[in-house]
Length: 293
Image 1 (tube, rainbow, N blue to C red):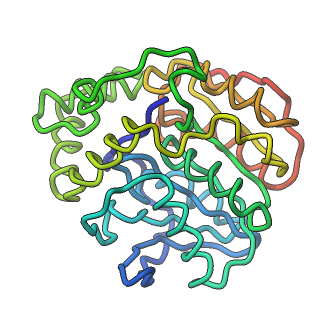
Image 2: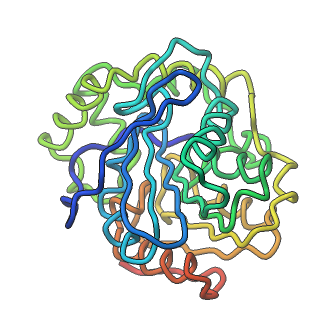
């Protein structure tokens, strides 16, 4: 079960910088990146992340699609009101984001907490989602995946307050140990402090510990074409969660990326895009395919 966290500026530069914009949602400033034209695709980052998590994906998708990548409420450059944040909060803000920008339908691509949000939004607003991509998505209770319930002391590691804690967090997130250098850890820690999202992260941790908004027993309502993408070596949200999503969403397709951790669009971008783009374009992918790095 678990979420994403913040990744940092370790991704490739945008080939052509997307437009940086803001929109007011429920009186709060929501920052987002926008690029391309064509069918609409919305990219949803994970816990402590922001639109930069999709730095390698936006220029690739924008060749064929109209791409939006918001900093979800409480993260990135968006406002951070003092709320009891939960997944329902993100679903409501995404729905209002649709309305404010005149979006009627879109394909949703969500990583970790963003995947949980995308699945929950699809259940709540099935007429507003064309295709769904769940990337190492959180959202299940420990009981559903037969996992031990984590304590707050363990989960607080997703909100590190030191350089050493940041290194420990990165070791859980990435398979490639080259991503664990001192330079990456220092950038990640500085980015976390700069974004000032520690309160938001703690509130989501508390929501999870209250067992709020789990998708258990609800996924049968998802009828849109769905692709489940998982890093085979994800130590944060293990592959068995992806297998549960595949079982619970009828007709879904699965892409497992070998030698990859929790954030495939960062760590394994080429394999991730090779599966993502055909799916969003309506091409049927091989079920239970495994992409080698």
